[in-house]
Image (tube, rainbow over all chains, first blue to last red; front, side, top):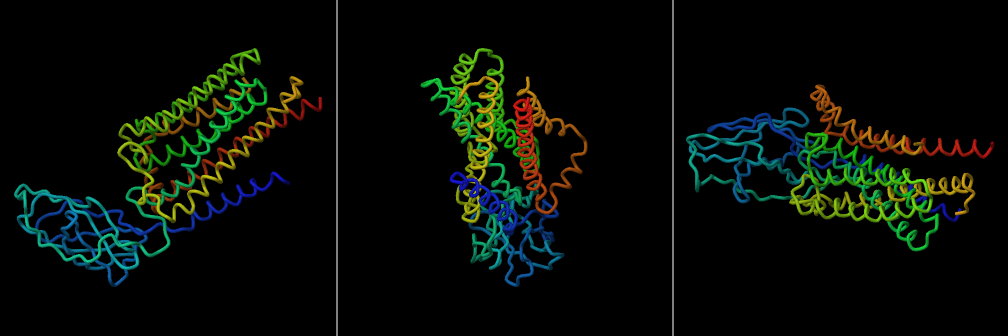
Length: 345
Length: 73
C-alpha cells in the first residue's frame, strides 16, 4: 500500500487531463473567407468564424493593412451561426497589397486572421499610398471567456498538446532511466541494472512509436502531409531506429555478460544521439515543428495559462504511467531471470 | 525471435501512414477530419494512444501467461 500513492496520482492526473482537454472550449477565431481576391470598388464577402459571438451588438470588423492602418467595414448581416456578411469599398488607385481581418467584440476579444485577401491590380500604384484609415480603439483585446487559445490552421487540434507531446517527455524520461541504469551496470556489473536498462528501452520505444504515429496524424491535418522532411521528425525516426537497434543488438549476442556490457555501452551512445537529434540539431535549422528552428513554440501566445493548467499535469501523469508500465516490465524480467536461469536479481 | 515479433509489428505501424498517403481517398479523409474544427484529429490521437498502450498491456499479459504455464510445469 505504501507504493500505491503515485499510481493513484497517475490515474487522477490523467483523468483530470482527459476531462479538461475535452470540456474547455476553444477560443473564438476566424477560419476562412468565401473569396480571397478583391477588386476595386465595393466588395461583399462572407467571413467564416469559429466559436465567435457574432450576434453581439458591439461587433466590429476591420481590414488590417499593416500595424497602424485599418479599413472600416460595414457588417451587413449574420448569415448563420458562424458566418458574417460584410461590405467595404476599396479605392480605385489602391496599391497591390494583402489584407488581414480583425474582428472585435467585448466578449470574444480581437480575432485575427492574417492574409485573408489580396488585392492585385495592374493599375494599382505602389509606394506611399494614403489609405483612408479607420479609427480603431481596440486592437489585441483579450478574450474574456475561459478557453483554449484559438490558432489558425491548428483549431481544436491544439488539444493534442496534452496527448502527443507528453509521449515524448515520457520517452525521454524512460530513456534517461535506461542511461542511468547502463552507467550503473558498467560500474558494478549487476544484472539488475542491465534488466532495468532493457525494460526502460522497451517501454520507451512503445511511447516513441505512439509519439511518431500521433505526430504523423496531427501533421497530416495541419501541415497537409503524413511525413515532412523536417529535422525534428527525421531525428525522432532515427532515434526510434537506434533504440530498435539496441534491442536487436542484445538479441544477437549469446553470452550474458558480453551482451549486457556491449548493450550498456551502445545505450550510452544512443542517449547522446537521442539528445543531439531531438534537442540540439532541430534548433539550428528551419523546422515546421513548434519549438524548433525559427518557430518558437511554447511562448506566451501558444501556451497560455489555461493550457499550462492542463499541460503540466498531463506531462506528470503520462510520465507516471510510463514509469508504472516500466516497473511491470522490469518485474517480469526479474522473475524470468530467476525462473529460467535461476539467477537472483 | 520472441522479443522481435512485437517490434516488427511496431515498425509496420509506423509505415502504415506512408502507405495510406498513396490512396486516392484523400479528399474524403480531409472532409471527415476537417469537420467541427478538426476535432476528429484529437479523437483519433487519443484512440491511437489508448489502443497502443492496451496492445502493449496485451503483450505483457501474454508473457505473464507463458511464465505462469512454465512455472506450473
